[in-house]
Amino acid sequence: MHLLRWSICLLLTISSTLTFAQDRNALVLNDRSRVLEDGFWIYNNIDKGLEEAAKLNKPLLIIFRCIPCEACAQLDEQVVEKNPAVRKQLSNFVCVRVVYANGLDLSKFQFDYDQSWAAFFMNADGTIYGRYGTRSHQRDSADDVSLDGFLDSMQRVLELHQRYPQIKSSLAAKTGAQVEVAHPEDFASLKERYTSSLNYGPEVARSCIHCHQVGEAWRDYYRLTKKSLPTEILFPYPHPKILGLVMDPAKAVTVKSVTDQSLAQQAGFQAGDKLLSMQGQPLISIADMQWVMHQHASPQPLTFQIMRAGAEKELQVVLPENWKELGDISWRSSTWSLRRMATGGLVLEAVTEAKLKELGISDASVGLVVKHVGQFNAHAAAKRAGFKQGDVLLSVDGKSARISESDLIVSLLRSKQPGDQVPVKLMRDGKELKLDLPIQD
Image (tube, rainbow, N blue to C red; front, side, top):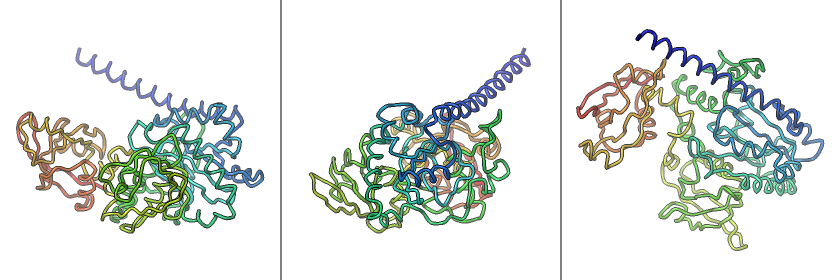
């Protein structure tokens, strides 16, 4: 009977896995058929888009879309489908849709690779007008992007395009420096599995490099070459919320509210302020703000030009040391690879003060509970070391101060080397245990 049950479970698991794979393949193939049939978008051909933009003297819009990923799916549907308001605005652009990162020029197309939907606005000569597409949560994107906000940002791009000869120099910093790896498939962690293009066969989804894999590959690149992971890799594309700026997703770079006692409040920001530029770069979206913050060297102040009550005003945000590390990286898909390196595949979350009290645990503890234990390959290292879901971490490496999952991962990556064993004291079923957490490549 046990063997029969096991066999049934195995067949159900295999069937579910095959169905999921088929669904992913169907999503990619159906997207291609639907968009090509419509005939409005140039599909997976950036060079053709640049040629058309030069011929028609229109700005270029390139949408990067990870088809199987659900985040931003609603916005993607609204943009791609024949919404009259969107189509009218899109007609002012040459529109390109790219559904894979294979062959992507990583020096030209630098953005937050943890996005499943991102837009580039460009001139035909390759100059970048701006970026659009932001996420600060694994699934919920409503606080960061909206159709109205996208339309408003498009209008800003059209205004920049009209003034292009006069403002071209201010756009130079929107293009990043040349990077060490030219294309995603050139990374050691990806080259054995992927090529420079998609294979539109029955297993098309398997041949696709997702954008978040590019972010993971950069982390692996630094780790495998024994280089210290720089702050911009560990805390990429800081969100304006860390400054205290809560932006309105329905409007182009307009402040919705300012957090009390924040850096932005100290700088004098107010709700309703329209941000014109940041460090001299014209802004069209939150993603543009993140680009400037990502590139900005600490701890020089951030300078903004804003519009308030019809008048332009300059504001400066004074930054503390390590200001980029105020952000939370736990929501990011690419943090999964950092968990493999630092916590053996554990996913951790904070325990509430009430729960600690209920468990009889002192406030003077790490206060993280194991939410998930990786089950396969290198992500199962913590499982093999004896960690279980529900374990509450009391101390790590002899330290028992409260800490977030993000900060714990970064601390271990900076202080430990692959092969190290980190002593952990934890609570399980009311009993204290001691285990060693393995640090990996």
